[in-house]
Length: 390
Image (cartoon, rainbow, N blue to C red; front, side):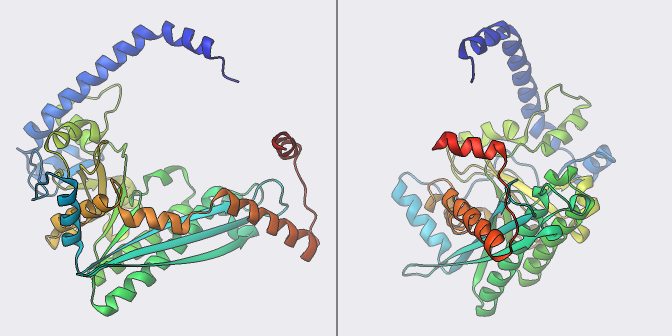
């Protein structure tokens, strides 16, 4: 139980330190904001790469501007909704998401259940046509674990790896369906498509998950279907890493990109975006094959919070389709009241609620004990939690 009075005492003791750290952070942010346009706009990509050398950072893929407007102005919600409907007309927007269940200590053998869900909207001049699909699978024993942890307990990353593979397979099936019909389609994924979060995962997981993603990126490029990862609140520090290098300065507290570009985008309002940047990162060099130097991003203002980050392969820039992608994402955000509509619906399609998880545990318990004659144990901790709820 939290002792709130003690917490307040501790915070008051640190009041001065908190205020000083905040002031230092604000000075760092302001310095980087000022350098953002002053430095980046006067250097070529080649010059920036030469300055970065072996370090990670972001390299401008198009001329750095203060902001890039959506190209349309709105005064009412009705105007925004009408614009979104017109922008999406004769297009299909697809989203894919996934969910998983991992077995707990109550089961004597590792089990993992994954579910991928796809949702799409086909916008005709008359109305929007909706569709959805999902794929599920269960993994047993070593197939549910990482190579380095094939015993117990079940390792979550092994199931994440298999869930992503299921999502990619479903995405490929779905985009192929619309490619055959010759419909202009876009694919949105919920979250970053730059898997830096795998830094501490095993080599097996890194190779498998990045390999699956590259497989999707390649298919989308081959079929000319723009694909993008939507990151609602990014903590990435790619632009600021480049700025630190240009300023020849390292800050105590690392400043995120959105803290630098956010104020300018907020002043202009809905739909405004930054210039496109190409990511230079050693993780991409090791695991992204032909896309090692071809992953890009921009930040875009789509709701009342900080700008979102949109990540995509460089071929979309080469095809001069970046602004088209920005408009489609903005239109989806309007329909979804601040979050892309198809991503919301894909999440609902794939998501396994607590009731589903309880039912899963009940069925697996029955199957293991009755059908397989495998004893099921209940830990003391789990038993006490269950009894305390009752």
